[in-house]
Length: 263
Image (cartoon, rainbow, N blue to C red; front, side, top):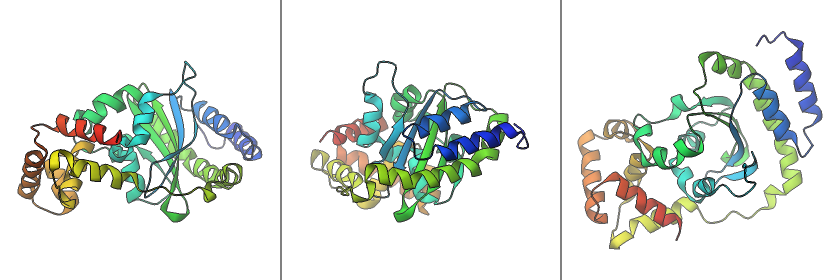
């Protein structure tokens, strides 16, 4: 796409005019898809202390509820590399899966049992930070990998898209009274409490942190670098986690995580 092409500028003008319309998000996704096609999309508000809020999403073929996505909102989001990235970097930007996914991400139960089925192959997000450490995110999923040309195009339009996200937020607040919504107890705290007391276990805060990073797809080496500890210390934490929970594999740990979501 050439930015001097007036078609894009006309599109942005129409989107600005529709900022206060109920179908704004659909119009925005269609505009982006004219240049880089996608197969699924969702608009999320990432909070620092509770589950993401869905502001808009692509309708399912059946018109019903996407059960896999409900699992995501119930707690799997804590393993999502995009959610983690939104907490670690508060800046307006285009975020690619390859940039934020841990080194062992595609080998995790989270990837095999959720991401691969729900997103299929690749994902990018336009992220716009808001007040109170929240992030407004437009996520686009694809059944194919986005090409270098796709990423280049998305990077070129990113300033326009994130600016539109920032301006749309004012209308989201007005339409849905989001600022008045009560903040429930942290879902992360609930899940950690359930996991730490599984089978009478008493996991430490560091063991819980190591366990979450394991499930997110970080190798022992990557965990050590992220937490600034030795690889041997990471292995000791893993050994203690397994012993305390009475398990022998990461898949069993993931199952405990899923069970904790339902409590």
